[in-house]
Image 1 (tube, rainbow, N blue to C red):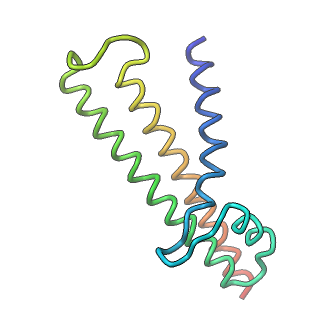
Image 2: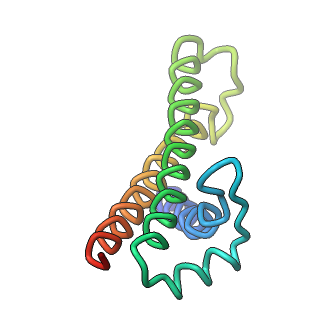
Amino acid sequence: MRTLRTLIIASAFVVVGLVSPVAQPASQHEKLTKKELTALIASATTAAEHKRIAAIYRLEAQRLEAKRREHEEELAEYYKNQLRYPSKYPTMGDHCRSLSEYYKMASQQATTLAEMHEKLAQESK
């Protein structure tokens, strides 16, 4: 039952994670809203547009990977001294492990989307 609940919660995070990454800018100078990026993806026909989208997803993948590493470090800290943390379920270790797995999956998805748009950019040349 706990596994099913965890899977449902993780699925919800994936859905949110797929929506959130699209709002991140490709560079410090570029600011796109979710609506603008959705429109860009829907109307992308040129190589430059697909490269721009790919850059946004690459940046998001990097951000997600950094979050994954952060939670991996917290998990390692938890295992060094578990007695510092409450033992009630879910434990700090469960929390960090779950988030680490989520960020890993979300990072892989963002990388896959970036690769897809890079391929589309090469095909539209």
